[in-house]
Image (cartoon, rainbow, N blue to C red; front, side, top):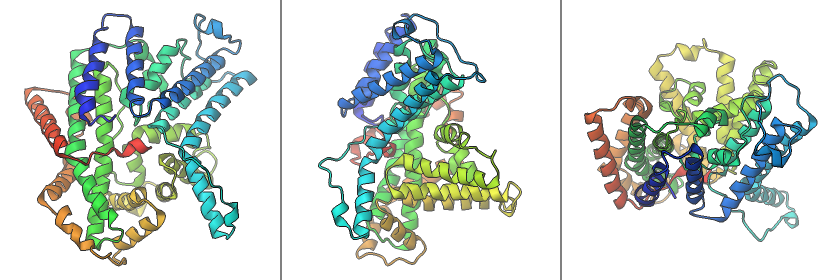
Length: 491
C-alpha cells in the first residue's frame, strides 16, 4: 500500500483516523494500540508473513533494552519494575555489552540476509565465471524476497538499543509503546529515520489539536500533489530515456535531470506526507529535506538531502569509526567508507556502491580543500550548478539497472556514445507539452518555490483554497495515470 493511492487516501486513512480519534479521551496507551494495529495492517497488506519478522525484531530489541537498562533483569519484573536511564559515563557489565551486541548483530543479520543474499550469490557466480571455474557457482533454488521498508525500521530499532546503551534514551518498560515507535505507519516503510529519543516523550504523551491536524493535512496535500503532478511525469521521461540504453546526448541529459527531479519529488513528497500524517496523529517529526538542489557543495547537499539518514550515518557510523579525531587521512577514509556503506544500504548492487563512492570522494575532496578553497570563491550560482551536475551524474548509477548500462549512459552524457537504433523516436513522447511543462515546473519548484515546512507554518483561507485545488487536481490526474511507482519502497 502506498500513500499516493485511492486505497490509502479514501479507505485506510479515514478508517485509521476514525478509530484513533474515537479514543481521544481514552488513556494514551489505547491510542498507541490503535497505531500498532493500523501499522501492522499497513505493513502486512502486500505480504502478511513479514509482520511476523517485524514483530520478532521488535521483541528482541525491546528485550535487549531492558537487559541493558537493568543487568539484574528478570522478564517478569520488567513489566512492573522501574526502568532507568544509564549514565553516559557509567561502565557497562558483560551482560549489557552482550545485549547491545546481540541487538546489533540480529538487525544487521536480518537486513543483510533479506537485502544482500541474492546480490552475494550473483556476485560470487559472476566471479567464478570470470575466473573460468564455473563448477564453483552456487545455484540456489530460491530467491529471497525483500520485505518493504526493512532498511528503515531496522535502522530505527537498532538506534534505540544503542541509545539506551549509551545512556541517551530510557528503556521502554511497556512493549506496546516500543512497538508503536517501530510500527507507526507514517514513517514505517520509507522514513524519516527517527531516533527513539526524539519520539519517546510523544509516544507517552502528546496532544491532538486542530492546528496540528490542519498543518498535517496541508503537508499531506502538498506531498501528494508533488508526487502525482511532478514526480510521476518526470519519472516517465526518465524511464523512456534510460530504457533506450544509448540515447542521444541531449536526450540523455534531459532524462538524467528528469530522474533527479523524480527521485527528489518522489521521496520528499513521501516525507511531506509522513510528516503530515504524524501531525494529524499528534506527533511532530523531524524535517527530512531542505531544498537539496540549492546546495553549494556535496557536503552541503548531505545537510539538505534525506537529513534523517545522513544524521544516522554520522552518529552511528562516522563518529564511532573515529570521525575526524584520528588524523587527516583517517578522516578521508571514514568519509568515503561511510558513503560506500550508505550506497550499499540503498540496494544490493555495485551501482549503489559507486554512487556512494562518488559522494564519499567528493566529501573527502571538499574537506581537503577546506571552506576557503578556490571553489568557494566562485559565484554561488556556479557552486550550485556544479554541485547539481555532480549529483545528476551520480544519479545515473543510482538509476541504471546494471553497471555497463550506467557506463554507457555516462558516455552518452559526454557525447561519446553511439545512439541506439530508434533512439530518436522517444522525442515524440518526452517532448510533448505535458512532459516538458511538468519538467519546467519541477525545476521552478526545486529552485524557487518555498519549502513545505516553511509554507505551512501559517495557514489562511487563501492557502486553504490552493491546497484543496491542488489535492483534487492531483486526485483527478492520478485516476488517469497508469504510472505511479514509489522509488524508495525498494530500499
